[in-house]
Length: 186
Image (cartoon, rainbow, N blue to C red; front, side, top):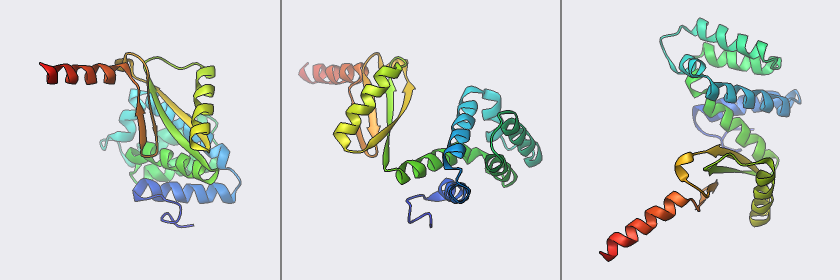
C-alpha cells in the first residue's frame, strides 16, 4: 500500500505508512495507536520532552536513549519502541507529533471514521462528547472520532472542524462579527 494510495503525504505520512504496514502485518494496529496516543499526550504535557524532541542540540544517541527509555517505562510494545528509536536515530523526532497524527488518520480512514477537531471554552464531559459524536455521526453519515481541546479564549460555544468543513459557533466569533457589523453602521 503506497502513501499516495491511502492519502498520506510528506515525511510524516511516509513514516506513518511504514509504521501502519508493520503494525497491520503484526496485528497491532490498535495497540500501536494507543501507545502513540499516550506518547503524544506525554509530549503535550512535558515541556522538557517537547524541548528534547525539537532541539537539535541534543545528540541523536541521547534523544534515542531518552525516547526509548520513556517508551519502556510506559510499557509500550516493541514495535512502538523500535519506531520511536528509528525516528530518533534518523533525527526526525521533531516530526513525531505529525507522524502520530498521520498514523491515527490512516487508522481512522481504514475504519471508515472521520475525525472531528472540537475546541470548546471548557472541558467537555463524557456525556457531552458522546452526544456531540452522535450528532456528528447523524449529520455526516459516518462514525466520528472526536479530538477535543480547550481554548478559554472562546468564551463559550464550540468550534468543530471535520475535514475541510468548519462550524464556528463560539461566543468570541459572534462578538467579533457584532463588532464588525457595528463598525460598518457607524
